Image 1: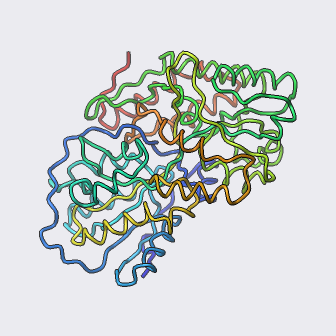
Image 2: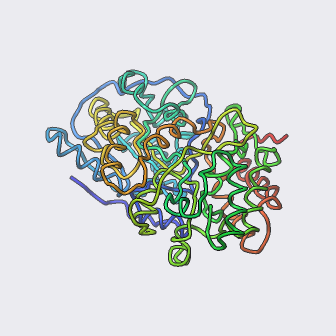
Image 3: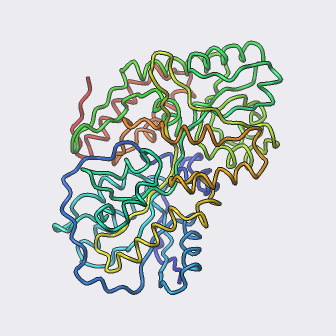
Length: 458
């Protein structure tokens, strides 16, 4: 049975987040915290409900994930499931937390399984609930889901779910960033694909002179920090202890990327627009030479939105600064599944979550890159079979999946959303990103403090 019985008002959303909703398979959600080290906490010991009665399980999911639950139900007709479609906490909503707090007070109503687009939910879902109730999320590594299954996820994929050694959610998909490029244009122009950010900047300056109007990136998307500053290991928010965060946008890891972006914005080869803006799609989509961005850009942005013809788009491994010993990248999107610690049917709840996150029957044909390694291999084979890409994207995707820098922490606030509200408007007024770093930092600190974090800033 499927119901839609929560008429909650939708939050106002930016054009880019609306674009993500329309292109639901992308599972973006740039206004939400991205995955990094999960917030430390002093979570209570896990005590399963004493009466595991079985029966129907209640599942909350967003519209994009409902078909996965329905597909599971079709494959397991003996399992009784009630599906509730809700926001998935996209666009900065906190519907799940609000309702769980109510259920903590009343002592019933918790969904057995819930999907969320935001890793920030781990911060509260792993902590004690109202009136001393145990955390909403069950630590799945404590006999709820087999360890052999958890071991099958990509390196670092479950880090955003892990608090004090326990895993409080299961990762649905990854949205690791790679360097997208138009191979046809690169070949036509005689350019080599860069391997470092320095080479990227030099090529961007060259493009501005030799092929004015062509672009190597964009800085006006709300998720631009997740693409550029995360990859630069900028400590925009790094958790160091329970409810304690370091914010240091004055770090050279931040200023070096701000300088690179400002240089190419001034040259004209990085746009201040969003890739999902109507004007960008109409006037600039066919001028994109390179574009650092998430794995879902391939089918969602280039194929479906830009309508870029087949055999043009390819992906390269994430860039690095020459001084850094290794490559790092960021992440734009993805989502997680929670299993309720209050569930009286943990076995069925765990079986559903295991299936929707690991089964090739669903994940191999899903719209985004699976977090489970075996499913990701099958998914990549499917991408190759489409014949869309100029080269096999599997090597770049696979390498990037293990390169997401862990210092960009998942918190109850979003430094990316703050960038969208402070830096992006300033860019459109002609200001530089470097000149706005202090403003961005102050806004992050204020938001963190308002939520009860202790903020350190060197």
